[in-house]
Image (cartoon, rainbow over all chains, first blue to last red; front, top):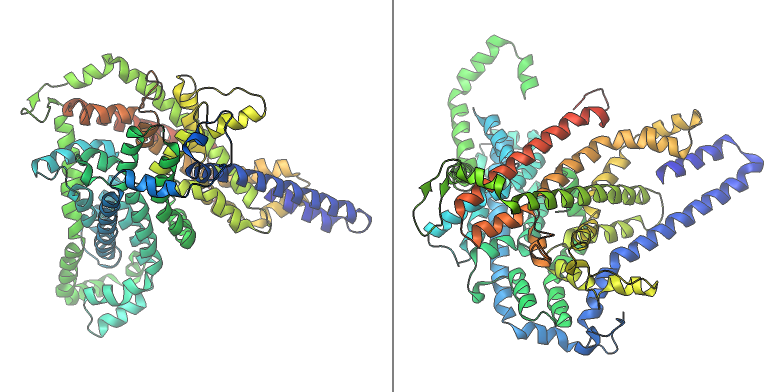
Amino acid sequence: MKVGHSGSTALATARPGGRLSSVRMQRRLHKILVYTLLFGLAWVFLLPFMWMISTSLKQSQDVFTFPPRFLPTSFEWRNYVRGWTIMPFNTFLLNSLIVTGANVVGNLLSCSVVAYGFARLRARGRDVLFLLLLATLMIPREVTIVPTFILFTKLGLVNTLLPLILPAWFGYPFFIFLLRQFFMSIPHDLDEAARIDGASSWRIFTNIILPLSKPALGTVAIFAFIGNWNNLLDPLIYLRSTEKFTLALALNLFRGQHLTQYNLLMAVSLIQLLPILIIFFLAQKYFVRGVTMSGMGGR
Amino acid sequence: MQVQQAHVPEKHRTRVRQKLGRLARQEEREFYLFISPWIIGFILFGAGPIIASAVISFTDWSLLSSPRWVGLANYERLFTDRLFSVTVKNTFIYAIGSVSLGIVAGFLLALLLNQKVWGMSLFRTIFYLPSVVAGIATALLWVNIFHPDFGLINYTLGQFGIQGPGWLQSPTWAMPALIMMSVWGAGGGMVIYLAGLQSIPEHLYEAAALDGAGPLRKFWHITVPMMSPVIFFNMIVGIISSLQAFVLILVMTNGGPANSTLVYGLYLYRTAFQYFEMGYASAMAWVLFIIIMLITALQFRLANRWVYYEGGLKG
């Protein structure tokens, strides 16, 4: 612990000489304790993933042995192909890519434009509007979900991918807030110099603000990707026919229809999880930045 | 900006404003042009639905027929609905269980990671991973892990000679199982605590050490008070989101067995999209919103007693 660590440092400086070796012992014991805990907990946190991989490679009869075995007796790599072809997963993948891609692009475009307005342009009513934007962050999804569903029903868009895509093109308050905070931290000198040279607001936005904001835009892109890749609620509400299903919804269907084939279920789940795992390992710092910037952890 | 203007003499400022009048008006037009996507979105997907939802909650509407005004009937019905009280109870159990365990686990993990030890970033990655990838795939994974006969948990318990319960298939153990799963995602809070811990000034600990304070006293009298605003923040955000959580519960137990995991959001979802009772569902949504607001307000009131803001600002 931080406490214990600084405590032992203070002890070491306060009492030099003969006591030093016992202090050193104490510090070593402390380190051993910390590492034991760290490795133990890391094991607990990773175990579910290993169970997932292990199950996905088991033969069907190995999944239901009693007592269960941790490791598969033989590695059934074919499970991945079998799981993927048992249902039209290529179609589901394509739907997921369309929805997620359109959401990432839509959010990046709309949210950055709106955030620039709030961060850089002065106007009467701006602060009130911004407060309004923040207030919408507090309204539970449940309140708006029914009227939005009715709206899309009246527009005849139920059972299309559009209800999952359109809202992203009109700005998402959380991302607008995140980008606005970032834009505000960019020094004004640059855009003022450009303005004196006769650059328009749009030019300043595209040529100065956006290139300087790649980290924040990256954070938004990643949050939008993961949120939509894993989104289950909207597909559940809006998609009816199987050929419109996204991967997330299809996994739920798979579970209902092939309840006992845990090995195949784990194989396709792992495939669905893969893009997120890759993004996580490649772009970890963006998450941490986004989480600490906005304070929104673990959603 | 405000500060800069305050230093400019009043007379000079009006002259500047007159000279810039045309430019300022143009800037204003541009502002509204830039934020216009959000304004449209706000009307279509924000304010519009909120007002509509309030109106719909006073009607009986199945979408097939036209809405019929019923006044407060939906709200009256809620308080006699047996499932309503069941779901409120389940939701509170879930929220209190997952938020309190999540805070303790996230905080302890952060303390552990705040040690200056080698490999810190690797361990942070490992603890943080589950909270980021959580979704349908990991929910299905946990269904597998909780399997009474062939799951990982009962396998592990079996190694110690313990016969594990039926977990998701048992009315007693299904809710604890869901709460356990949510603790697996404590790494999201951990990242925030870690940032908080790293901003506690070292000199506070040094001063306490000079006064002869031991590790435990330093923890209770420095670490905890300095971290209380962060804990408070995570508590507020955590309670709000856990009161609304239901999608993964729908996947894992669908409210069963015997309604033991039927949470409020799930009941609302069924009412709206399986029974198509739009009026009743909207009334439920508003009651949930009011409950959330009341709890948040109560937490802010109680915060005065335990949240410490450096600089004497009391929340």
